[in-house]
Amino acid sequence: WEGIGEGINRALNILFGAVWALLALLVRLVLPGAPVKQGFIPRRASKEPLWLRGVAVILPLLFAGLAYGVYYQQILKRDDQATQLVRHAQVLVQSAENNADNNVKRTQLTQALDTIRQARALHDSNEARDTFFRIQDQLNDANGITVLYYLPTIATFAAAPSNLTRVLSNENDVYILDRGAQRVYRYGVNDTTGKSEPVRGDGTILKSGDKIDAVTVDQIRQIAWVETGGAATKSALVAVTGNAFLQYNPADSTWHASAVSDAAQWSDPRAATGFFGNIYLLDAGKNQILKYVPTANGYAAQSAPYLPANSGANFSRAVDFAIDGDVWILNGDGAVWRYRNGQRLQFELSGAESGLKNPVAIFTRAEVDTIYIADAGNQRIVEFDKNGKFVRQFKPRAQDGEAFSALKSLFANETKRKFFFINANTVYLANEPK
Image (cartoon, rainbow, N blue to C red; front, side):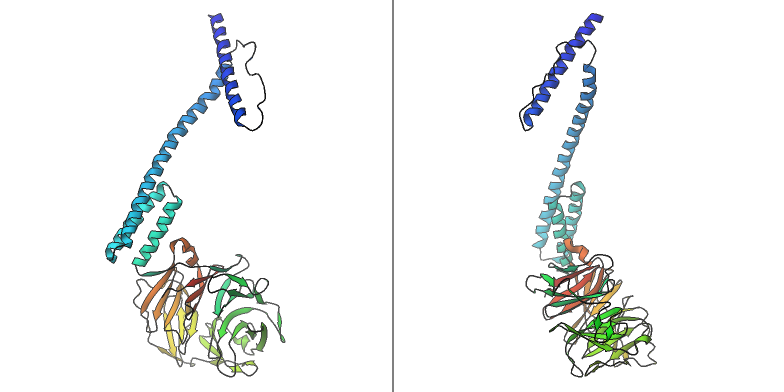
């Protein structure tokens, strides 16, 4: 029996060596280059059971291959189920798009949304994601939400030290205040393509430490666009610093400084805006709106209060304001206060399906019939008429949802029907649908 066992071991060793040599030859034939001649079958087969070592290696590989085969079949089955669900969701969407009944449309889209979520749970393919975005856009449209489909990026800045806080626009120019880096940028935007580029270099037109006339720029607090009006002033960008107003003339890219003698008395100037040539500061610490009138050489060094001393105003929650003849103050709790000639008017927002949540910016002008509010908490822009009645709301298309994830500032150009807004440290342009 010992002799028989040794013979069997020799035979199995030779057989295993032959199989191994054949496999090695096949591998070398597949690889580039000429195969190397090398003997794999020993001339004298060992009587030791070397084949057991090969079996010890091959069996785990065999079981692993079988397990992978089963797993691969499961993947194919799962992918096929996902594909069928995507097709079903697409049929529902197509039917909803052709349905004139808005209630039935919403029901079909809701079913499609549930179906596509099941599909994405099985296999999150590009087709499934595209269908998911399509359903969300259609559902928003059915729910009365105006979808913004065109959102080109004007500029993106590094997270630190940048902290973008204000965006303004005039004609084809966009101005950006970066309070973190203490800079003001100017970008040119093509209305047709949405392509933007800095006017020169990196777009910086003002930074802390610059010398303007006899004034050294210290802290850049706010920027405002001041239209022509008052005492021979021209439309200009105005930067509010710690001790001066700096006027920027876009035509020749020059700055002019007007020292502010009562700047040391500012308490908490949270926002600035221009109207009819005047500059207005909302000072939350003093519960007052400070008015600076234009002069022949710039602006008055002393402010005049807009509100009477006994107004009882409390601007501790104020986040932004706008002026169109009346003064509109946006509060962080969602309330909007309206003042006329220093007196607060009765005013409330109404009609929106949900209230404002962490609003951050308000925009209106005398020539605009509505007010726009950037509602960061609900990731939307909301439009109201000047009686406070809800008009509509805007959200980006589903695949661009992150563009409204951290709203900060908003500016609207009603003539060109465009929004300019800051989200985190990126400035965007959006076409406002009619």
